[in-house]
Image (cartoon, rainbow, N blue to C red; front, side, top):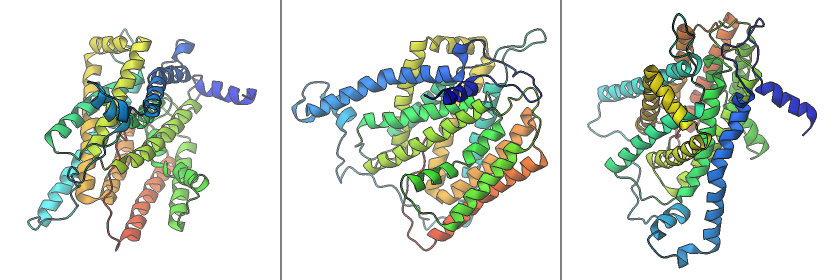
Length: 431
């Protein structure tokens, strides 16, 4: 690798200075705590499971185990490696989003209020707790500064365990389509989902929460670039216009000179690199899940499969690093953290169910509007609760971004108006 590029990577990994030349609140104590070292350590832990598993799957396929295999383990190996071809009689069709005869406008309004409230409460609480856990110390007293929680991977595990339990219970209580996808195929989406979540949590050590929210809102720009370069896709004029507005709004926010208080981490190169990693891994997760939905599975089955492998990966990696017990000890020392982590996981899991229900009842456009408003409210709450300063120019930039997002929803709705709606599966594991 060229020395200049290596220097850029090293500079991105080193703790940056706050605006005004002051050091960050909790600088890493050793090089082993630098984010890029922990990232590669986590990735090596996941690879210790992924690589042998992938080689075993290829071996069983080459040996035609589906035809020659016998014994007690055969059903398990068949489900994990080969999957099951669903029969027409086994398929449970997804209910169409149609209004029944006894549905009244008042009932529809109540359902919409229920969905919007559930989404707002779940994800606004999730956002506030996420910033609290990653940026504020626990156990602080008049004589002690307390200690920060630093292991983002342990927090990812907490989220995935509860989501796995909720999805499993839902699959047991509600009839689902006959599962046909080979289980190992979930592992790819699971790996990218774990890495994207890790990058998201880790980025809060370097960037403010409003910056992170705007970065998520601007994902449409790299998605369009990759679609143009890789897939040779063509986009309409309104798509280029709204993408340009989003780019302008994000630039206005990032370049505005609002001073951050000492308790908030300033925007650094490390944070931007981590946010780029989050967007890249999250984009892969979405595309891989889209391909898996060809097996005619339900969204909750997808949620269960992805979270199952996520738990395996994170537990294995934490055990290899000896960090699982340390995370449990931190919970024991700080009951407030244990409560925050539990609430964070509850909001993440049940928020996902609200996503499924809202899209099933009102469609993707209504869901997108609700979540866009949620992002704007999340920025406002973060500024009020954690003292982030947003200048007038930065505020205008935020307004431009969300105006562009709403314009995209409106333009897409007009484009699809008059066409027969095709039922689509909602996104899974976006947090």
